Image (cartoon, rainbow, N blue to C red; front, side, top):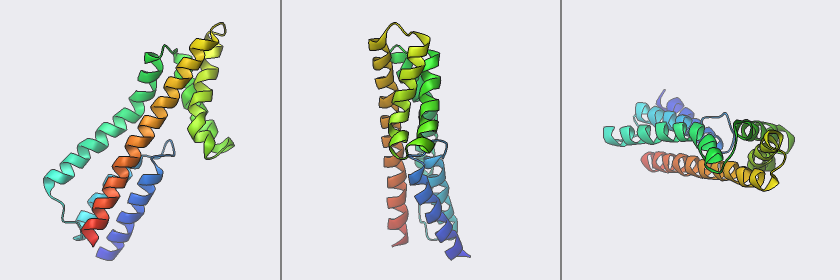
Length: 159
């Protein structure tokens, strides 16, 4: 049974890393569940403090993932239409032009949303689109780093 838990833990950790790139797939929470499963298997010798810290990181990253796009889009002067456009652009990008659509979908979607909202100011729309793109890059990077670190600690615990 322990081996099954270890295998499932590493599947969750690897899928968690994919979740750093794929919107809608909760990367850090899946990686954290992998750590917990490894702990339950008996192969993870993590302290309670370690697990609480990673829970805090996971919760913070999950909140950041939902809040950062709208915060940066607004910080760069964007409208609600730009925020919705950024979200829809990422979703469309997943299916239309993978993997590049995931990266540039937020930019194109925010640009289109802002131009629909205010078609007279193309410079502002570009600035807003850059903010949406920046939020995607920052969020993806943070999730990838956290998920990679959790995978690192899991491998280290196993060997």
